[in-house]
Amino acid sequence: MAEASGGERAWVWYGGQPSVDFVNTRRRRHAEPVEYLTEPADLAAWFAAADLAPARSGRARRAAGPDDALFARALDLREAVDSGIRAAVDGTAIPDTALDTLNAWLADTPSPRLHRDGPDVVLRGPADTDPALHALHALAADAAQLLGSPDRARLRVCPGPNCGGRFVDRSPSGRRRWCSMAVCGNRAKAAKHRETARD
Image (tube, rainbow, N blue to C red):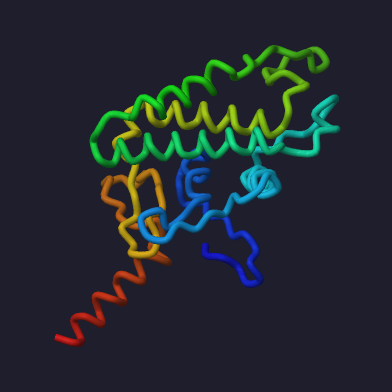
């Protein structure tokens, strides 16, 4: 769950929701931030890794991926979601700018339609939706569902000194502290052990 050797992107999936994992493409926000989305190709790679890139058909098949303008909009969406997460963690209201950004994405989301599939019908989005745009609409809807539900109270920020990862605490007790016990939790236990041994 850290950067792989050779500078490869190593995505993290401890967020508990796709929109929270999307926010975690920028890590260590409270220290020296590490940005994993530096160009449109990174965004396309994350969509593929997150299984958010639908099968391409029609016009979408010819699309090369997100362009610079959509990439900039994607980063704005990600930061709006993070503003909502931080507001939930701090117990404050979501900033109006973040709410406006999320609502703009929701208003722009194409409505799903019923399509014939032999004798049955299936519900899916418009066939010509650009895969990157489709993925971003799905992320906006996921974030809206999370921030507008009681699950908002389960949002957390990992207190690890070099982390700050965002996640949804789905533990039965609601007392999960670390993004990952195997990483930040173990580091904290080791640091506490060293401190105790020094005393």
